[in-house]
Length: 261
Image (cartoon, rainbow, N blue to C red; front, side, top):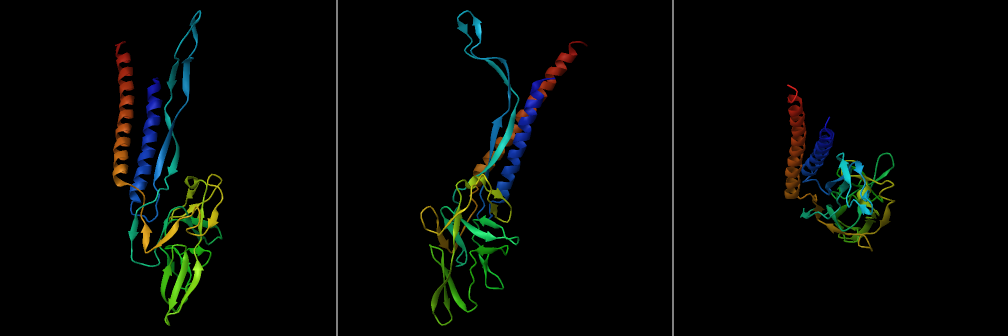
């Protein structure tokens, strides 16, 4: 059987994975703080039928060899942590991180997760939480009698009570990673650290290496729709071309079979 069948099939499966990733990017084009994924490919093993540099005559070596590849595979999906556009909301509790850093989120099981989604809310206990209800760490409580709440570029949370007295009630901290692309996506706009990402490095907003807080804004998804649509067309055409390679191999076998008729 022709090698082209299995080789082209790996190409079709790889392009199918690419389309799946593109579809997820497009589906999250309006998700706050979402980071697009990029598919990385690697070629598979080669059958070396003639080694480059083989002596073909006394004192003469072949300048090239004869290698036949066996296809392609998806090596990884890489998260691109470029900054998304900022959307003004006019809401003081909405924050965007201008630069590097993640908000720290406490999960029900006690684990810490990380997010770029700054749609902050206040729960029934006055605690600062995410849209899903997970508590921000370190814990910050907003007084019941707070009139207005302001969040500064350094993450300081200031409240003004009904009497007009202004006070600081908490400080937002950020975490950063040596390799944020290695973080594990867990849904709900949350990321989990692992050996690839390295341990979390905590600090204050606007400090060296950390982004500052922009209150009244949310970070939009960094997905560029036009680029994703171009990638989608490219993946679709590559899928079709690989299927044509299979059809071409089938026609070749058909012609070979007809010789004996």
